Length: 419
Image (cartoon, rainbow, N blue to C red; front, side, top):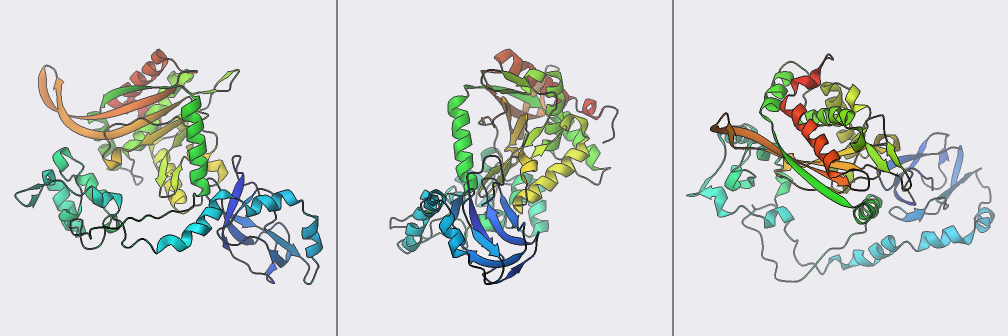
């Protein structure tokens, strides 16, 4: 079992492409291995015949344990296995998760009826309906009509449960069970499902626990007026092939703010603090299996369209489980954005070794006071989680103030470079 990432301690064979007796060439893919970060292809370093497979699909084994033997056809490999130290073999047989999964699999039948998904439990409240009619913005209604989507199947994230454009954009038929969200069977028997913890989820649990319980977190929240950012984004997208998102604007603004506030672009190393000269921004991408954080390197030197194209490529690679260790290593600052899911504000756990992480909420239209008059405005809340061992309140506040300035005056971000 090869060590495919710096934090990998064991791997799971998710698929074998070869069987015993098959001929294998150097560089040929033999198996897919699920690591703590992604599922990666395992290529053979030698050529020969696959004589032995020692790990079944779905089983976890520690790094350096024997998973297969390649040699000459008819060669005696059993004597080789006897020479392998007993310790790796013992580890291979007793990982806690696979053993649990083995015992759990047959117990699926006690679950009489499939439990509704969490989304279904949060069925639309009466706020979503007025006199039997669905509350939705005109744009949301038009989009739903164009896409052939029944508005009654969409949960609104706007004011009072109102359906807005983002709800239609993010709607998928699989979000709701068949038969509609209000006509699900009543579960009157206790039941549950248990699944083995994936390598990715194990690593997420370990790293975030270490961060939360080791680094003394404190949080700074600020509101940012996004009116100019909205207009700038619309203008850029009208003339470019690569469409930028608000998250791309935030990445660019954060990189510029980090350049002016280098103490935030830092790491705690125990007996010293590292102040990074380069700016590598990790972008949190949510998957069903967990959270991956690929890195936009030298983000302050890249244009908005370059950032947009890179993040889009990372997102697709993450969904396809094709991210490589070089894609997620080296971050100096991290951004986690839940605004597209209707979240107004939240706090995030620091992604070590970074000293800070920026949690970004959604853009909300609210009344604001401008020049003594109450007018409509688009406001976004951001929360900076700081490691108090490295970053003090004033340092974090100055960074947020700089970020706010760039996002409220986004034309400055374009500078002398192309879009």
